[in-house]
Length: 435
Image 1 (cartoon, one colour):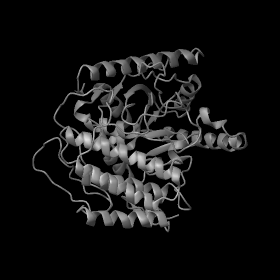
Image 2 (spheres, helix red, strand yellow):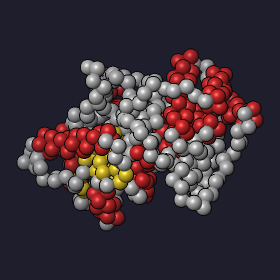
Image 3 (tube, one colour):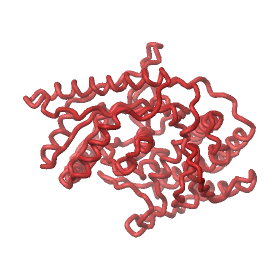
Image 4 (spheres, helix red, strand yellow):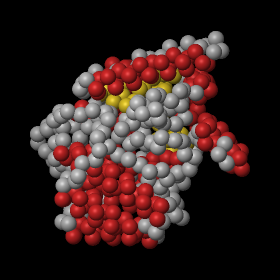
């Protein structure tokens, strides 16, 4: 299957109307690469887009301003942003036949424009209405081209990120989906007011990877944009290559949901059906179990090769907001069997495998539904907020070696939770930077 073409009428309609809007509102029809001589943090990056439909990269690393992790109600848009948003939704309505999909995509468009407008008001001047519309059109076009219909992209039990750098090895692909995903969510991250704790630990992990050893990050999981959060914050801490090379353990939703598919195409993935969803359909459980075994085999080969970094959420899903009115977002408990399985894979690889806890604060960026839904097609919200990660000291993998898998998991979870609380307190106090 060649992924750079599609006969889908929806894709053609989106592409056609995407060109139309550039004429009606004077949008640039191809990305303009702005090369700055200054080092102002709001500057565009100097690397060209790999696709004519991609927008130039903007860093949301701007002048500090007062902000809190909890986002207020959406502010009214400026006339320019409102006009661009309405035009995008109008095009979407003409291109999508399904009422439910149309509603979900329209809501996501409204949310994204609100987040980008907040970024613009906060000082990220490059995130204009034109930039936002073009970025949104990319996401919608890629979603309709690769996330639905007969040309929907098929993920295997493992997936190597499609970067568009070698079309012959990627079935003709010329799109850098990794860059697309980072460029899309970066404007919604208040990076100047974000926090990275554990720079020295990241440096240690990088050196271990460079020696051909493996590193596994046991993380909490808060939003669909977590891979992009990791990438942008690793970039902030100057660990860009580690971010690009990272493998993510992914559930079925991010490889089947229409909007999620193009973002997942830009990530190195190990595709596993989570325990929370594998029993949803008894008829497909044997097949899903077989696929999980194949995914584990693929992961073991990566670890045997060495020099592999893996991000995994042992909770099996995202953290959910407490429903007691407190607005708190407690960490979902880690599953001891999952943690123990990764320790076992590390041992079987015959390569030194190191474990770190990664605490993440990203809930408000793209909050999940309050309740777990077995199917795909959830409503997505986007907020302009600071984000944060904490990388713990290397975990002592001997803990629990006496057969008590719960001991190592409990210690890891406590360390992760402590790092999470540290991030929340730091953001509340207005701290920012790399520590």
